[in-house]
Amino acid sequence: MEGPRVSAFAVFHKESQRQEGVVKKSKHAISKPSQKHKLLKKKRKLLSSGPETNASSLPALENVNEIEEANGEVYSVNSKKEKHSNKKVKKLNTPAKNKILNTSVTTDVESSSKQHVGPPLLSVLQDLGKIQNSRDRASTLFEWLISPIKPADFFRDIWEKKPALIKRHNNSYYSGLFSTSEFDRILRDDNVQFGVNLDVTSYTDGKRETHNPPGRALPLVVWDYFRNGCSLRLLNPQAFSHTVWNFLSVLQELFGSMVGSNTYLTPAGTQGFAPHYDDIEAFVVQLEGKKHWRVYKPRQKSEHLPQLSSVNFSDEHIGDPILETILEAGDLLYFPRGFIHQGDCLPDAHSLHITVSSFQKNSWINLLEKVLPAALKVAGEEDVEFRKGLPLDYMDYMGVQNTDSEDQRRSIFISKVHTLMRKLADYAPVDAAVDQKAKEFLHDCLPPVLTPGEKSHSVYGAPVTWEDGRVQDNALQIGEDTKIRILRGGIARLCSEGDSCLLYYSTDNPRVYHQEEPKSIEIDFEHVDAVEYLLHSYPKYVAVQNLPSGTLDEKITVATILFEKGLLTTKESLTVTR
Image (cartoon, one colour):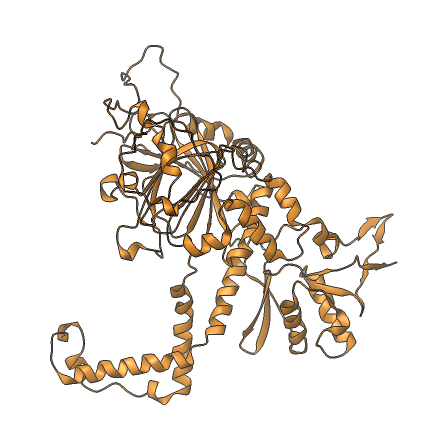
């Protein structure tokens, strides 16, 4: 069997299989790596000293991060420019850095040696509450996430096209988002289940293994795996961390697609996952320690922006990386779906990163999967051409066994199919298909984390209490002059289904993905215009009396229904009647 792959960024000294002063064996350290739920703690093999691995080659790492490739394969930002002497710095021996680089497309954010400084995350999240439009909040948070790259530049030049690397030289930039200490707290305080919320993984000798025992992931067992070289992947930190939940729930409104995350805690000198590509747009946010990353372009056209994630690859099947770097705390690495990647820890530090992901199954093909069946149904009902019978003898000249036939009937048949396909577009219910996608999005969404203002001006902050043996202040009065608006811009969607009109919403969603069924309420026909008006008016407030509904009582009724469902907020605190 081929020996374990050794990082090009460190030289490991050879150790004998048996050392003096043997450490006490853990129950999670075993002699056979294939044994279920166990892991053999392996040592990296010695690399012969050479120009690719000696210490003098290490400064080239920063050189790689300061430039953008001439062929546009990688977008790289380095906030700190190193001061070099007249001596030439050796380049990394990979295709990415051996190419002649076009410095005219280099993104030079700061020419000085200052680190990139931004406001702390908790301050950013607090300030978002001052922004009235929730869509603007999402844009502001994303701008902070990828700073100093501008969002407009990102979506024009990078999104779905190529990886992007941001080196900030600021270890505290993402502080407060998540930490190993919080992970330890979650293990102790919450019901984390192996295989459901947490995966224990390893990648040694080119083999990826999962070591999940059944049951709850208790700290004693989890940390024992970690000490023995296993990586720990928390699959849904937003279910346990309030900050991660808040962070993702804001961003999802920017993408119009579910924003999820996993956290990865990796011991020093190990690797937890094999090379692979994903079916999501990935933002790797380095939180603690550092990690050596390699990114490879898709192997073939069919793997650009794939619909599904890949199997695990071996190194010999993926070619040379187009980007190789060490992420340190405060850095960010983005790569589109389809770009193969792998990361391993250096021997001197553990790594904790969170991967923020979005745009899973959110492509044109996913929309057309809804459009085409519906278009066929409509065409079949409205156009007799689609209902006419096939030729009696079409099987005699069509089909794979007849592809080489020169029968003229083949071209006539194929021409007819093309004609019907063109006509099918006229029957495509595109808006209805978009509504179906919107319903799925709202079902996928995290519920919003309310700002103090949203809570105090909505049903969630209604001053109803139990005092002195009875309910106090239980009548909230919405009047004709009350100014109202939808709670958030992306929390609700009005959809027509048969003879009914349903309002789908995300405010009551659980923090666990699809733990419950989609949430909706049926809207009476006489209230549809009022609801639609509120959706279109956001973020402006609308007086109840100005709703396009029937009588004033009907306007107050629809406003009260939506308010009690937690879908509305008022401009002023509601009058409480006693």
